[in-house]
Length: 206
Image (cartoon, rainbow, N blue to C red):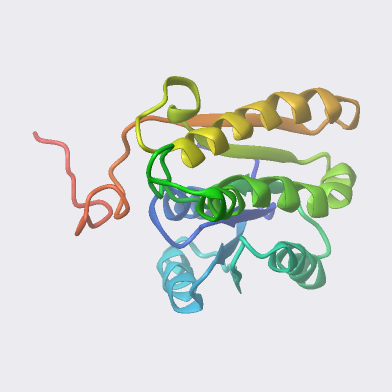
């Protein structure tokens, strides 16, 4: 498949694990240049080694995206190395179980930083570069933003916010030919949802 991504620079937050890792692999297969942003550099580097089989390289950036300054630094580092950004995949987050009864102000706000606010900040800091490249934004979201789940108020609110931002940005950025889409994930087998799960361990039966 040729998605015309060859040599496109695409930032993937949470790119070392789960869905983000799968996105990085998909980009590498299309000969894009993934920028893997994650909180542990060793994990980032591991995925970078994995995608060398596709003949592409990647940039690894260690960042804690709940810290606003790390969001800005990740974008600036990408621009320092490549001088452009063609795509942003906002993916990093965690269903942390901050419920209405079980949570409190501090945990709720912390969850918003982990799951929503960095979506805005990454797009905000990358915006000029995306305008120049007429790039794309993909926001990974969850069905919890539409259906709820129970005992996950902060995560549900974050995903509702992700969906709203996607619609808002699609309108705001239309004049710049920047496409903005969301992928709404339901149940997905990742190490976060299934302890001990190893990617690609599920195979089709013949």
